[in-house]
Amino acid sequence: MSYFFHPAAESEYLESIVFYESKRPGLGATYLAEFERLMRTICEAPHRNPVEKHPDVRRTRMKQFPFTVLYREHAGSVQVLAVAHHRRRAQYWLDRL
Image 1 (cartoon, rainbow, N blue to C red):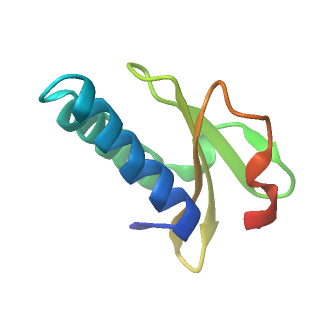
Image 2 (cartoon, rainbow, N blue to C red):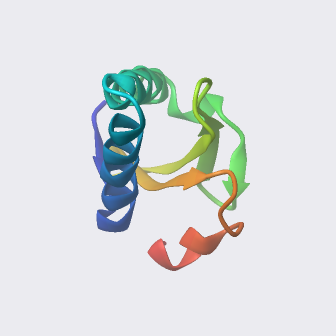
């Protein structure tokens, strides 16, 4: 299974890479690598993670970075709805459904 981003989620993701790379060279690449590992795991078994919003939005956390990935299965793929920093307002991403 493959994944794709909601446009707003893709912006969050790219902004995070730029931010971490600006803090320390190579840290953006570390963020990118962790995100890719997480997405491979999600794509292998998307139902493994808990439901955040019924009926089909699920969540999982990154280990090294303070982000939660919210996603759902959509048309045979995984759609990333948000790459939410833990300090952001909860459920700000609901208008993306």
